[in-house]
Length: 114
Length: 115
Image 1 (cartoon, rainbow over the protein chains, first blue to last red):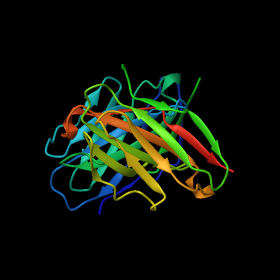
Image 2 (cartoon, rainbow over the protein chains, first blue to last red):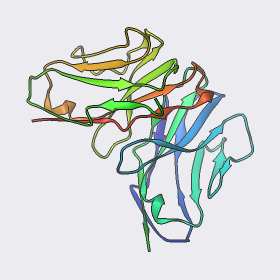
Image 3 (cartoon, one colour):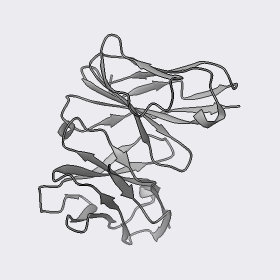
Image 4 (cartoon, one colour):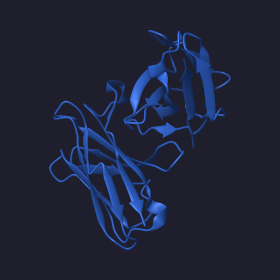
């Protein structure tokens, strides 16, 4: 079985600052995918960034980057130059190689203040 | 369509009532997933379709929950004899192919409130 843990229920950050969200997971699989999803009040899950476990290089998408530590089973998300539109719930998710059933963490609420 | 469409957006049901939630995936998407998201929690997997075949229903919480996708496009999640613990947002996601690497598109969900 796999578990995904997000230990920060809420994070507050000022505009233009940087915030880091933590995620740890537990799996016995050797190949898998990890994701960060953003869920604004509209409820639609939006993919922020993804990482394939066999790739050592950390994924980056514009202001979003991850720190993937495979041995430690850690997958943190860094949001740089935070913007008001980044305010949302952020979920870490896991899927093993295959057809892709996602397992989500409990989420971290990010609030960006002016 | 341009995205995954779910209807209704909100549904209030009296306890014991049957409900049907609709998901219209992106045209041509083979894979379709249903998730249940309780208030303040992350989504939990319910069931998975590849075209019209339901390949995994291990997440359905009870036999009151039933999902179908008869023609491999639109899917319906049916909940019989609703109970208060069924109150949640029900999310649908679709993907072009079986392989996850194509990525998912989620709908905006249906918020079900059982009173």
